[in-house]
Length: 266
Ligand code: CIR
Image (tube, rainbow, N blue to C red; front, side, top):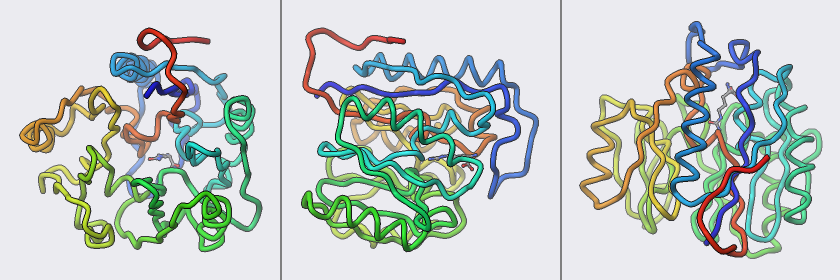
């Protein structure tokens, strides 16, 4: 399956990002940009075609594109992010994805961050976080339900988004931090727990060619590799200071397969 990965440049204003669970630390924007470029290369190495959305320097969190949309093969559901400062991020994403997929858009009072949404087959798990409201979950159900998806709300505590606590790393295998989410919520799906010394290690970006994964979590990486999974480590330390992980830096859109490998375009 070919995948187009949309990214958005690290804005000048990144250091003014929203923060919920982390203390504000100085962020080196030049370094963050370098790390983000390397992240995009990793996506490309694993077979994605990377498309960059226009930078938005007045929107500090605009690099974290995942939160603006939920992409299903059938449609793109544009979100209304839980942090008011982030809502203007959505228009550029709507414009780019509208050319590829039918789109629907959540309206006030619904709020939902894409980081709270985990798609496993025809099940859509959605975190009840500080960013995602009951109305947001209802809207997701209303848009996705007619396409045969079951939307399942999941409680979480201690972290920003559902995907801070759980991501899918292979068919039938979830990587979890059981301190932040009740891993039994995911039915019979297999699971691998993060190393206890690496609480933020559950956020992994699985692509058909391998897993893009923060270099900061070698112990959990070893657990993934022990399962035979190919892991491509990337240093995302500056983005992590803004409470971002590896899933939040891209929007993955499955495409009808073109000839050849990955590419970076405008
Ligand atoms: C925020 O608080 O919204 C940003 N500073 C971080 C968003 C990270 N998004 C994600 O993990 N999906």
